[in-house]
Length: 279
Ligand code: BTN
Image (tube, rainbow, N blue to C red; front, top):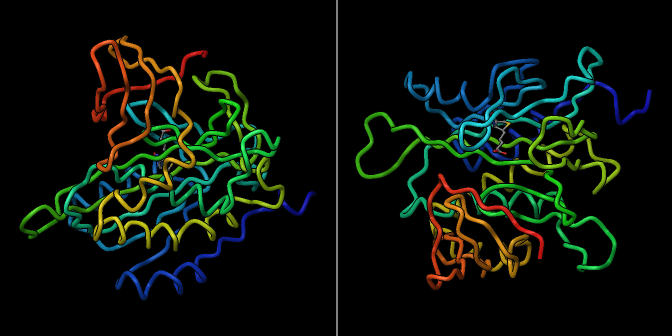
């Protein structure tokens, strides 16, 4: 068997060592299977279990995406011990001044961890880009993964701190395109040495730092980094209300700026879906 396709060796201890000094009480859990890591952390949070937790699942039976969609883990690798996708959720109490832009900041952190140096456009190398508000795509219009951010109220807390659950799903091995809205890409195309476990080790600690940084300073410090990887910039986009326009990057609060027939619009709504159209 290809050594990159052997059962995962999860770097739980290394991640704990790196993150525990930043997040007292932090734990790492790896489960062979669960309905959804995000559903589980949200259930725990509602039950008052609100410690900082990284929950990884080798398989999800009811993974969830944005806008009530499903997130599929790949069935073709079932019973092989191979983990074809990285699926995890990070839950922690957070008290940012503003919540807007959080999923964009997460995307910046994950993209930079997986590909610290973005190859030049036209270089022919795979480029990990960000599709507002919370997808990771390769430049050729295929989806690598997605981010789902949810929050629960924080027991006994005044003000606006909440327990935030950041769920991340990334294809590691090739995925069947059948039934998917967007053709899939996988991390092996970017780095042939990546496994789910290695990807997690790269992503986890920088992600915690990004979330703590976001709590201190909001989205503004991530804005230029998002712009570097902005898949929609300069593209014609269709908003979910049917109107069309040209994407002009994101504002300091993470809103997507779209120039439409009605002028420049700042698109904030979590319920809006934006699709590039052929230019
Ligand atoms: C999207 O593309 O709409 C977001 C997908 C998020 C999927 C991840 S997988 C880990 C966590 N658990 C879930 O049920 N969803 C997120």
